[in-house]
Image (cartoon, rainbow, N blue to C red; front, side, top):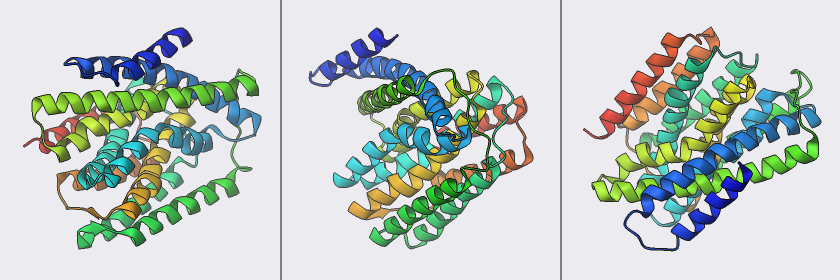
Length: 319
């Protein structure tokens, strides 16, 4: 698999340098493979890293895995803000958070009943708190530099809480040694970032061909593309029975998206926000995740309901 991963990355770099009608399709194809292979390596590496330093699966999912899988969101939203495409910045973050909960958590629940950390509910509460913070900030219709500072400060507080907790929760167990785990983390993280970027480029190219609006593209195609690392990582973690990483990755990625990705983006550029269906689903999905984790509703009916809500979200974007 490693050889195919290296070949895919080389082909991605080559395709991105040429002008070709079908380039978008191949970027989606090779980018998707890089995400799958990279996520598999990243999950194993994260588990090994956690075991070495006595960190729980849930905590590693909330931090290293969440930050690594949010690299595509950060790249897209930050660059979009610099290039004065604010609607892509906000649409990508809100759409990614909705995708992480309704699509990714929904599929993870369908694969098998999850057994997340006892801290999953508390961390979901932090996710809802930062979501409410964004809601209050958005009442004036824009996010400014001081909003970004507040969002970044909340993320710093969140990391501090995790640090204080590290000795309480049971540590992660892994089958690989630390040197190999570190190698997997680095290679997997690089592959995720490159694969996510290529997938987004391919999705945007296809969207231009279909003549779709920028905001809808950001909240759907781009958000789905940038959420593919979270998707593959959580699915792989679920299959490997690292349930703490699967749920922690989703919660942590959403907090990273709001605190770091959006926080950084609105520091470099003011971002206009409207209370539309995208924002409604963003708030709704955060509270739904909190309820499901708190009540431990991990049955297949819940997974199906999540997917139905995600389909409704996509439909509303285009009508």
